[in-house]
Image 1 (tube, chains in turn cyan, purple):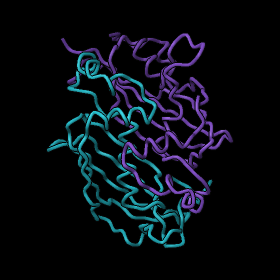
Image 2 (spheres, one colour; image 1 turned 90 degrees about the vertical axis):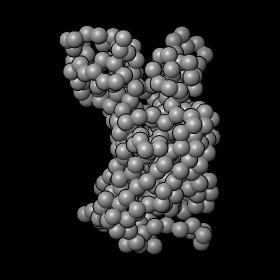
Image 3 (cartoon, chains in turn blue, red; image 1 turned 120 degrees about the vertical axis):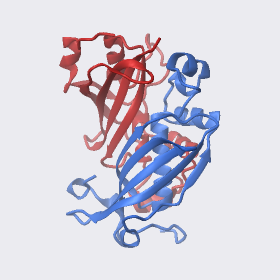
Amino acid sequence: MTSEIRNRTLDSVKQGDALPKFSYDVTPTTIVLGAMASRDWRPMHHDKDFAVNRNGTQDIFLNTPNQAAWFEKYLTDWSGPKGRLGKIKFRMKDSVFPGDTMVFKASVASVEKDDTGCGWVGLEVNLSVGEKTVTDCSVRLALPVDEADNPWQRKGDQWQP
Amino acid sequence: MLDELPAEVQDWIGKERYPEQSEIPVEKGYIWTTCSSVEMGNPIYWDEKVAEELTGGPIAPPTMISAWFRPHHWAPARKKQLLPLQVHFDLKERLGLPEAVMSDNTITFGVPVRVGDLLKTHQVLRSISDPKTTKLGTGRFWVIDVVYANQNGEHVGTESYTGVGYKRGE
């Protein structure tokens, strides 16, 4: 593989590790681009009048699939391309609006190998705006156990997300 | 809002409904637009050589899974706009709850979604709560699973949504 691409291996991670914080300033374009990229045409993600007067929210807001994509970006920026998502679970407590600064933080909750030898990290991810937690997220992410391993090659019973 | 859960809605729980085939094959345009929307530079999605080496060819970001089954906003000869997650809209209509938002989302990922795949889905209503009042209004929570497979019948993922349908407070 191209030499400059770095992949995090399971043995380099331990429980309690913190991932680097990531911040992003949200604009109306962020919201609308994310909605269109996920083929979500519902008006609360592009029409402020609808969002305010029908949904009762302060503005248009980030849609669910694009929020998932932001989590994926944050986590695979950390893991490198061999990092493979097994499961992602998130609870949206509030919405992300234009003008907000999203802040992503995460810590390693668990490090393990399953019965097939697949390496997994459990991650607790927090998305906040100001002092407010917007979304809490739990993730099961496969990491290579060594330089030669590649979770993407796992199939059938060898993949237990 | 209906206080009693209609028998028709009760009957939907646990049933496979709305088997559908995606209206678009998995394609790079949406993959790149999605990666661009979140500034995701993962070389699997941008570098064909890396994709070939790591994933045996180009794949889509796993979290894009729902994008592939959202219907076109318009299509020729279509009289009525199709809606994604139709069970969710059925519940809003049948329970008299005009507004709705999603609160929880869980996605379990199976085999990678590959460029050229044409996905199939079905939806299953898992549960409906008793009436509840939140800051948005009074309504009910519900959980809907969306199960995805590729054209070879391989499981590519299951998405579980928790939604809340409500009437705004006076």
